[in-house]
Image (cartoon, rainbow, N blue to C red; front, side, top):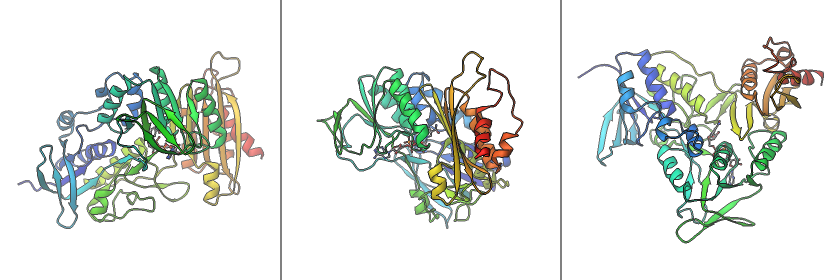
Length: 447
Ligand code: NAD
């Protein structure tokens, strides 16, 4: 019997696999096992809309490592079709159900919970009808792609990240797309001025956007035929529900791990939970918000990877810290890039910040230079300190790089004046001499 440290990771998604790889880097002799309920590990669910739209031809392209490759390159034992049912933190054992339905027990020295999140599906009549999907896991994506081949009219519920990425991809393959959104604007994660630009982009590209719509159910004999809202009915061949996710914390709760106010797992910056010897990482966890200085639940892929890196290193005896997030995110809606970081204006005020904000429209390249497009920039500034606490952009190019700059500025508490005088590069193919970000900061400085 080996007396090396035994690390068991529950969940083979982004966080779990990052944790296993990181643990191996820190500790060459540890025994590391990943238990994953589905048939896949190390998959990029963020790529699913592009697989559905044909930009990624084969679903296997979304898988970075097979269990065998991971075992070969990292010496990590990956067991798929292994659903962990319960954890006993005291005896340091867990029970899992193998693919054959057998219950097995496994001991561990350190456990990492990387159980992710699951799609939120509100209670609605007729949910059992065929043709109603969510987007999260590869198996479901393959089923959805197949179902799309004989469906023309698609209704998407929710105009958030998945809803809008799907809309672009489903229009690409010629579907009639209707989006039903509960709130009065699409992408409520950005401020209303930016949502208005997004609405226009959706309309230009033939998406029917229906706002203020609460779906109460579905009608059909065997397969869905109609989506029913409080005030209307929409004929449809297929439905995708994309109204957010919930942290998958049943195992954590059962193991006695403390949850935060958001309902996700509470950890410290080393990704340790309230139970000694149990770490957590990924979409099941809260993260410290560097502007709010409090834990928040913002489940995103890059955060999950970094949390996994930290949890794995510490579980294996290393010493890493996850410094937190500022809520940076980016997506593409047809030709429009949409990015945000820090706090939105309303969000900032809700949390007691006294703010001023600017919203400008500029060009992404020098005016005389061919190509380029419009870009809209919003900055949210704390009045008393002049510190930038939020920024959002939509535009036809160059959003990603400017949101990157802004997220670093926010993370490092820069003021608008420091942004104005920051030494950023310039050449006509990339920006006007006064970059849109700098222009927005100058306007804010004058206010
Ligand atoms: P989301 O939170 O981005 O959007 C959900 C949308 O559904 C919101 O617009 C919300 O107002 C709406 N909604 C909520 N309840 C509704 C209801 N009953 N009827 C109609 N609309 C309703 O969630 P998502 O699009 O499902 O994405 C899931 C998760 O994945 C999110 O955490 C998201 O941040 C993440 N994600 C991120 C990216 C990215 O960063 N590019 C891409 C895909 C997914």
